[in-house]
Length: 269
Image 1 (cartoon, rainbow, N blue to C red):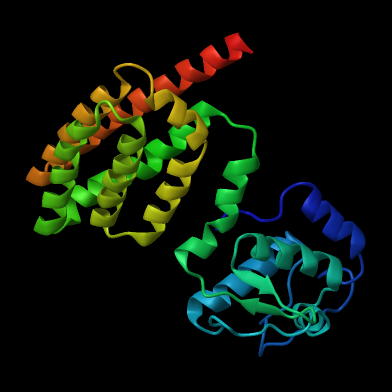
Image 2 (image 1 turned 180 degrees about the vertical axis):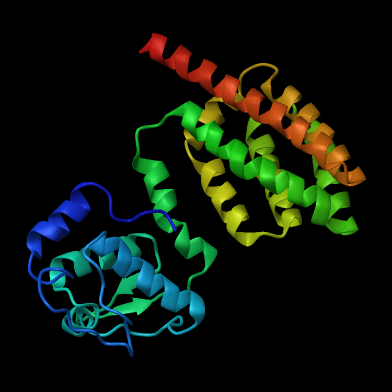
């Protein structure tokens, strides 16, 4: 799990609670909930990791209500500022949700919920095309490889048929965009990894306004369709290396046309 206590978060937690951590005063332990009292190091991170560990082990399940902040503070041997930092971080991740009355509840932990904040971040953050397609390469190429290895014969046939059907939409950017979504989702489904598929969809959806404009440029759809067919043929034959190579070239094409469109728009502005 990525660190949740970075820089100011830990410093604030330690500044606000100088007397309640190990080494300052005797902590109060509550093994039934938290186990041993927390050390001074990375207080908020440790709280978040402790709660996540209980969820992973099944000690906490979807729908369970956490104790009150006062009770958790006693259990962990800390008081509220660092505890609230940890709870806020887990809420932003979609692991917990705050209900009326201030009690936190474990969510259903579905992939769509867990990446909801990730999708929000993509929609509001300053757009960096290189970062975007670097992330897409990591996630999408893994899915294409898994799809080549795991897809059922029926899924492979559908992927190939979708790729071939794309030739019908060379002169219709709107219809092609709808078809493009179906093709990519078919690849994701064939990989049989719902978490990666959800991440891929979030990355696909980022800055679709730019992609809409780029797809209307001459030759863009024709090249995409040709690359779709190359990917689909490799998936159909179960050649993971060829599928990944073809999809990588497709991502380069999408990235390059996105950059060209953004550069043109900047000049016009």
